[in-house]
Image (tube, rainbow, N blue to C red):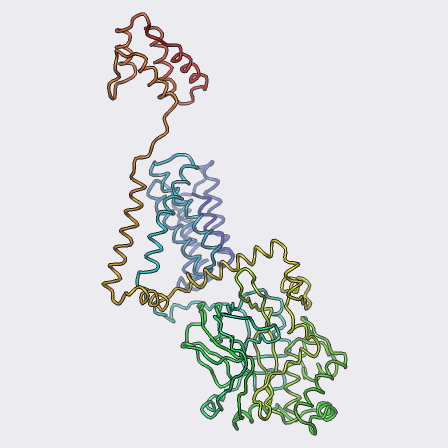
Amino acid sequence: MLIALGLITLPHSQHLPLPLFLFFVVLWTWRFIAIWKPEWLPGKITVFLLMLAAIGLLYSQHQGVLGRAGGTSLFVVALGLKLLEIRGTRDIYLIVFLGFIVAATEFLYQQNIVMAIYIVLVCIFLLATLITINGLHAKISPTLKKAGIIVLQAMPIAAIIFVLFPRIEAPHFKWLDAEKNQVTGLSDTLEPGAISELGLSPELVFRVKFDGDIPPPDERYWRGPVFTYTDGKRWRESPNRFFKRYMDTPRFKGKAYHYTLLMEPQNKPWVFALEMPAHFEAPLQRNSFYQLITTKDPTQRAEYKITSYTHFNTGYLTKTELKDTLQLPGKPSERIVKLVKQLGGFDLKPEQFIANLFNYFRQENFFYTLMPKKMENKPIETFLFERRYGFCSHYATAFVYLMRVADIPARVIGGYQGGELNEAGNFLEVRQANAHAWAEVWLHDKGWSRFDPTTAIAPERVEQTLDIEQQIATRTLTIVTPEVLHQSMDWLKQAKQVLGSVDYSWQRWIINYNRTSQQGIFKHLGIKDLKTIIYWLLVLVGTVTLILARFILKNKAQPVDPAVKLYRQFCQKIPDVTLNPGEAPYRFAARCRQAHPKQAETIDRIIQLFVKIRYYPNSPKETLEQLKKQVDHFSCT
């Protein structure tokens, strides 16, 4: 039981404050040592003082017991304190049930299939404890086997209830939010180099399953926040949203991509659709900047069906958009104006100026790096004229700034680029390391058009696939072609992809099973009201129960004890004396001696050997061999 409780609490080491977890470890270790040193168990006064210490720790770490972390900490600490109070069977029952509650709290933090399997296996140990204290089995192996069988028998009924029992959306009480989910990701403000730290994060952001072909790497731009206003250092979203009613209707052309996007929990209501989203359903909405926003709780994992086109024309530009996308923090410096003039920004067409600027990046010793140095003072000028080392956000912000100096509407787009193909499940995995920033320029007769200045320096960043594991290890941009990636995939990476594919299905069909999903199943089964749901539940649960009862209650052939088998052979060798049901061996031996006095000595020897084997534990193996020898040689004639 102690081992099971330790394994149940172990995953909480990643979530609970270190002092609280160490407090539980001390209590658990104390109780473990007391198995051999029972005199070391604390008295009532000591337990009371420990309880006061626990309350102080809880208050200092959480300022209360409300919320996910506070409530979980309360249960874990209570479990540790209760371990020191075991006095009888009732206390063991309480500890086991408290252990089940602590196991359930782990799903408040992690809901992947690996954790689910882990918790089920550990709960089997707790169930085995209940079986043991009820005296059904004394040995470990049969007890664990019995507990595992009980869990397997319960799974069909649990599955039926999971699918058919009416799902009620729990109300969200703000006053219970004693904590905020700490989810890293893109911010609603952007500084040059600000998202470079995400380039070293393997954290999963979303997964995408396409109905047909997957777009090539250089078209995998997942649109996020649009940064319009700048103070020369920071970029932020425009507060102006009312102009949406005056915007032109986007026109799409080329191939349509239909896909299902599974978003991981995040702090912002952003849904990173493939640029440009054309068709989607509630709760998704498209804002004035062609970014998808969800009205659902973004801290919950959610799935969306979207259709996007990678070729589009957004049409004319509104007056508000024109004003916002030409905004500058002040008069540009002489060096900036000179550079724009040198590249033809004031004279040439926007397309030619953009081409000249790309060539400038290529020819003037600019470099792409994941670890740029901070540029606190005038970051754009420092990057363009001094450092010339930067991340994608350096190139995107500098590009947009130069466009605006040339009186060309432009803005910075944040999001993700690329994605690694999971060959086992045929879906894309997009991680924080795929975070990217690019630019949009409004062009006549084309609308908002994407330009990625990073491609001028590191085109492979967009055209090929990131090797995220190697990139994190080396802290440098690591690119690999799909062919090389497939050839170099070792068994460990293949196993990770298979596990990722299984987890993707688990998240889609189990974790994301909600009221909407249930209504779809009800519609398919023809279920229209609560009365029909109850009928289905009763019929299916009853059927499964009858099937299980058939297997559980049927008479199973029990293995015959070798000693009993030899005893029966001995009884059959005395045809004129019949063994009565429930007759004791010595009583049967007395009747045999009376019928066959000449064999009395042999009869007594056989009965004594049988009784010794059958009723005395730890009898030597030689005794069974002696019994067999005596029975084989016995004869009444």
